[in-house]
Image 1 (tube, rainbow, N blue to C red):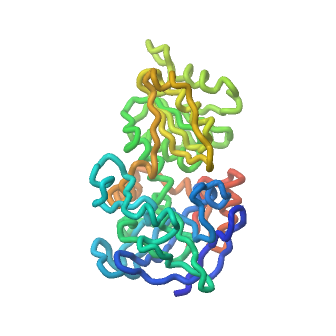
Image 2 (cartoon, rainbow, N blue to C red):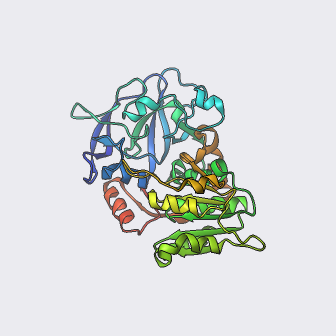
Length: 375
């Protein structure tokens, strides 16, 4: 079938909106009509060429919502007409990782997903008879896409597609890092580095669990009002603090008889390896935990003085907020519909697929929290 898609033809070039061909679902797969998709920094990361796993040409996009219009043989957990959110982190519930209950990083289709292919080793997308790569197993920058059954989360039908698509990445990643990865406790102090779409959802998660002091760090003063909107209690401009940023943050978190200072939890949402080190050093001696959410460019490495870890600080990583997609994503959709969390204010721009490159321009200019393409 012919579908409309935004194709990444090469690194550093704008997406090309064109007609491509999509083969129907095979065994264990579903065909989804995408109704809306968010434009995430991870898409830009790949498009820029910095992604070591980036493949071209490809149909990008991983933050979508839509309706199942067809299913392949053997599909039992979803059916035609179900509303779903595609999952770039699937949940097969059978692989060693899923069965361990220690991680959300399902390995069932990891090998082929990383190659831009479906589980059988082929692609469903093509143009002029030439293969196009899938992206993160989802490819939501198309009005129809094919996914494995284990890579869709069935959600309630009264939830608006143009809002819940954000749960497909940004919302779940931020809130999940707080609740699943760090397991932040009520009354904790926390510092969030980078107040973009992920950082604001970390703040929202911290507020949800009852964190006491929530410090937001950014280089853009305009982010102060955004952070406060979602629960931030203090704002620090990293440029103003300069080389004294860590010392300033440690001093800011000194409370009562505890004059050592440092946050119980810190979160890096920048992808900057230097900031990742600052986040670790801003943790409290003896028990502070620093969670890395941002993804750094190819070849970059993090560094720290061993003393920081020997004295009790912990470095952790978080992918998709530690969420098990088919299990947890429907719950987060419920939270949104029950007004326990907010999404609407973060959707700052909407546009048709034809204008998708404008969404990336808004991101580069720092003028959007999340742009959403509505099909």
